[in-house]
Image (cartoon, rainbow, N blue to C red; front, side, top):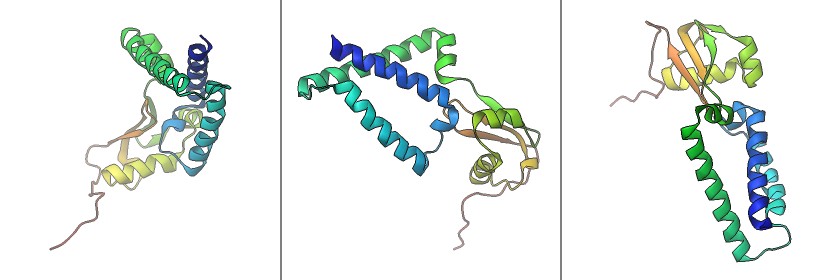
Length: 160
């Protein structure tokens, strides 16, 4: 029974910790984030396995984690409030070229993150060209350019 309860407890603990750390944690991974994930993975492994390193326990652990994950996704589909609590909601972080400071500070992102996406996706060069920037549930940033904003291809042009 312990082989089932340990992974369930660790799963929910990590779910809460990642959710509390904010959407920024889920955005593009930095070197720091990668190292942190490696350390967390190593620390978690000991809590999951305990003293039993058998293949049987490993298979039971994997099966339990997958079952919990599938169960949670099914519950999220049926309970919108649970979905909102676990995955959050999109947040408008820029409106009509004006950064909404409280929201970006709470989300732990800055103007350079917004501009990076605006340049890469739409070829925009200034915040004033953006009607809305939205921090999505997965930590990505969506950009909605203003009508008539100068659009240039973000891909390098090639001539034949």
